[in-house]
Amino acid sequence: MDVNRSSREMLLRVPGLGVRAVQQILATRQHRTMRLEDVGKLTVSITKVRPFIVTCDWRPTLLTDRADLRTMLAPKAEQLELFAA
Amino acid sequence: MSALQHVRFGAFHAVQLPEADDFAFWRDRARQLVQCDVPPDRVAWIEPGGTDSLFAPRGRLGDTRLPSPPSDARTVRASKAFLQAAKTAICHSDPERFGLLYRLLWRLQGNPRALEDRADADVRRLDELTRQVRRDIHKMRAFVRFRLVPTDPDAEGLEAEEHYVAWFEPEHHILRTNAGFFVRRFTAMRWSILTPQGSLHWDGEVLCEGPPALKADAPAGDPMEDLWRRYYASIFNPARLKIGAMLKEMPRKYWKNMPETALIAGLVAGAQGREATMVAAGTLDMGAAPGSLADVAQCAERCRRCPIGELGTRAVMGEGPLAAPLMIVGEQPGDQEDLAGRPFVGPAGQLLDRHLVSAGIDRGAAYVTNAVKHFKFVSKVVRGGKIRLHQSPTAKEIDTCRWWLEGERALVQPRLVLALGASAARSLLGRTASIARERGRPHALADGSELWITAHPSYLLRLEGAAQEEQERLFAADLAAVAERLAELAQAHDG
Image 1 (cartoon, each protein chain N blue to C red):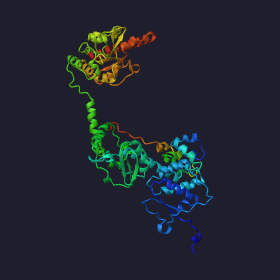
Image 2 (cartoon, rainbow over the protein chains, first blue to last red; image 1 turned 30 degrees about the vertical axis):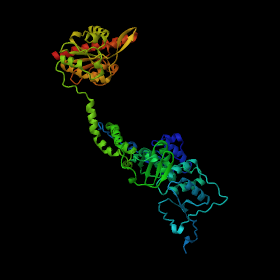
Image 3 (cartoon, chains in turn red, green; image 1 turned 90 degrees about the vertical axis):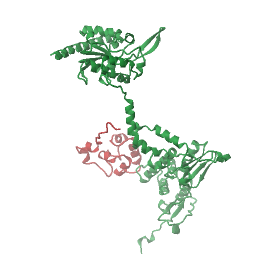
Image 4 (cartoon, rainbow over the protein chains, first blue to last red; image 1 turned 60 degrees about the vertical axis):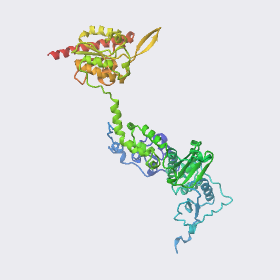
């Protein structure tokens, strides 16, 4: 998804971009062409968003086709303590 | 000759602020500088007590007289949002804040919407400063602790009034901004708040500012503090210990000036032990397992471990032969059972008897009992007469009474247990069961016997028409399956 061109609805479908981040992206791109660094300032985790967005200095060429993309991004499973004191 | 020789720098200006949080002064000077077209990198802002800028040593460039703006200078414009943020951010302790604000003001002249660029470093820094100041203001409201100054008993007038003094160390210059809150909150009190940057004094009518103070100026203790500490310790819930969340709300940097924080380490350390004690106190000590059915009957009669024990005439115990292969468990005795002292003698019992006969099960050979031993009811006046209206036992009451049912099962040792209704199923399974889903098939119990679940006969009595017929058919089918299974078990036992 091109962060500099896409509509609000399309940006909201990107995993890792919430309502707040999208709102700030829409306001910010009126003032500048957004770079990956700029998106990073507005989101919680740029690593999570990176494979799904295009900025003027970033294009995820090989990343989206990787078979282990899910394992790279999904949070690690963690066994919580069952009988915590 | 140097190439830079012909470059002309604009004059360098240094502005000395009278107070660290003086927004009006800053706004006045900043407006003047913008009108004179002085770019941000040619201004040094010096706060009181702060060192001069490295690039503007006072001796050489100490041009504290600002140029007066030309008569045709344009008006300085700033958005409302910027003014509000600037007013808050100016209280921050960062010495760069004045320069940052001036830089943003300068940029706002060229682009009135510059603050909307959320990826901009200056805008983000302004956001950060306002957030930190707001948090500090909030924490000061929560963590100021007043202490009573011992008064001279002979004093008169104002001196005789109680005077409360607090020592607080804010991170930013928020004392003056926060004064309004304390005046509104403690209007009737005579108080002073002392901080390393200054102090505030309220005498009930007038608020005065004072010079910076030392911690030693505030009283070291207060007679009420013991009570406050005891209250704090008593509201501490050891079973809800969340150290991370607690530290987030009450950061350690504020701890040194609060009397109750000395207790926290001990409370946290003892939390696990106290929780274990609470859990242990919650479990009922039922004593030794009963040795005979007469024992069960005698002890259950006296049992008052749940409120039902106080109700009814007596505990209605099970009846049947000691080595019965089948145990039938109902919910609880009803009105007639309570009076007769025998299980299943009322309308539901009669219905059960009819079905048992048609299924070919001999009630005399089965041990018939209830999950709950006492009759739970509410008294109600109907048509001039008082009736005892049946009430379903709660899960906790069923679980408490399980001890007696377990005692009976251990003594009778039935091969098959038939649970009538959800209460009996809960008592035997130890969890809430769905009759519709779990009826008509065996469930293994821990002692090796089989559990079958079906509806309670009183449920059939409540239904009408087609629904009643359907449920009666299911009930009969369940009993027939139980009879068949009993025969199989008896055969396996004998063979």
